[in-house]
Amino acid sequence: MTMEERMAKGYLWGDTDEYLEEQARAKDLMYEFNQSKPSEVEKRNALVKEMFGKVEEPVWVQQPITLARGKTVSIGSGTYINSGLTLIDDYKITIGSKCLFGTNVTLCTTGHPIHPELREQGGMYSFPIVIGDGAWIGAGVVILPGITIGENAVIGAGSVVTKDIPANVIAVGNPCKVLREITDKDKEYYYHDMRVDAQE
Image (cartoon, rainbow, N blue to C red; front, top):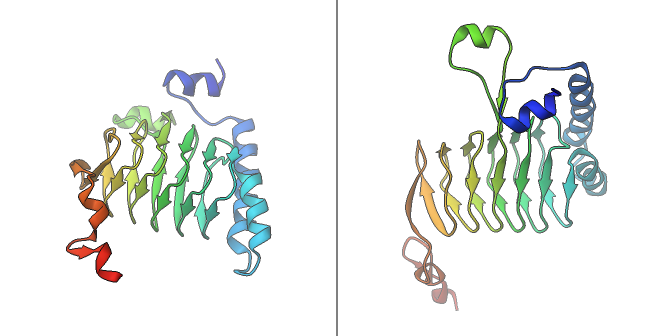
């Protein structure tokens, strides 16, 4: 069974020569991206398309980023990713359209066994992460293997997401839990008691 087949079944897997070569190529592209000048927008846009498996333009990815494979990641159109994104992307990460990412977000598809003897053997497991269209992932959020974030969900800054989050809710905390649904009232108040119409 190949490494990819083991990942797809949720089995333990280990590094292969092919994987390490692929990772080295991805990290070279990542280095070029991170070391580019702020003015080199076109260069970074081209590198984003080369680094990731699928990119629907336009997307905005700020420096720096950290990734493992790159080709396992798809990003939908209109998505904005702020600086400091870390992708433990050994397996599939699907980011929808019109998503917002705060600074220093981590998406981690891979973990290690709890028992130290299994960890010493080098085994890992990986499960896909899915971020629905229109989701907002706050600064410093960590999303663990196998998690799905529903469409338009808002994940509060600093949250650690250990379970799936449904669509159209605000969820916060460690572990992250649903706080409330997003309602029409949120069209009137954009932040605490700040009204949208007060600016007119």
